[in-house]
Image (cartoon, rainbow, N blue to C red; front, top):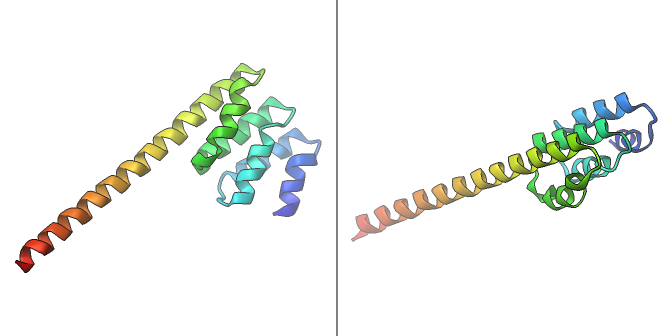
Length: 120
């Protein structure tokens, strides 16, 4: 992975950097997330777009502040639009996780109530 991260930062071939972001979009780790956030500063808009798509695919909501601070203010409209789309997708995923946790809590609460009622 260190070589991939290095190539993402330093390789002059834009197409290679785009392919690397796509590859990283199928992996989950703090190092991958950091590398993709770093790619949001690439000089090529297509690389920034690819990085945003990879971040959306990974779904790590912790990068939301980095998106709000950079790509939402990008010079390229396509990058700004993708940043909004990515933020929305991350928010929806986060809300779905919260709702799933709430439902799980409610199920456990009902189960505990039933067990307590049986003991009486």
